[in-house]
Length: 222
Image (cartoon, rainbow, N blue to C red; front, side, top):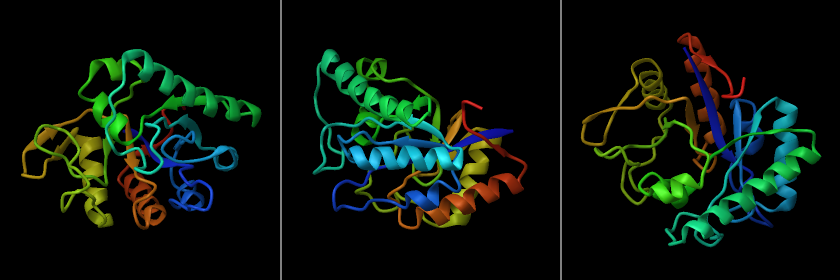
């Protein structure tokens, strides 16, 4: 058994500090790095790529809607061309900075509302490089969608609960929805959100729990 452990990183910008990037890099195997649209800025992007390189973490692009004020979590309506251009621009930014630092871009993971809309909209999905992903620290609705962060219980913070869910996803390809409905999910990677309180400690506990259960934690590209 093996799984990738990823986190959304490089989302700080200007004077705004978001996430626990330095701590998370010690636990994850893939970093989804923002390109300045929902979070991040040029200096943060380069620093995050360097940090990933130092820790041997795979670098990926984390494109989102152009919505710093809403942190990319508000839905926007785009044409197919606009969606493709939006994603391409951000992938190119991360890939270019990565190349300057001697690192190759390995994956793409959309952010926030862009991610959720792509799960429902084939046009958007076609503009994004897809990968099968599960969430250890988020609750699911019975239809398989992530529960809105505005609902109580959407974000899971208890490490033991997160570890148990992750192990079930990896071993049984299953997770319980918010109402107990069993969902089948065949995943390649698990996400811990970088802006979750104590995300660095949670990721460390999760990785240790996976490895102690015999799960190999490696980047998708390895």
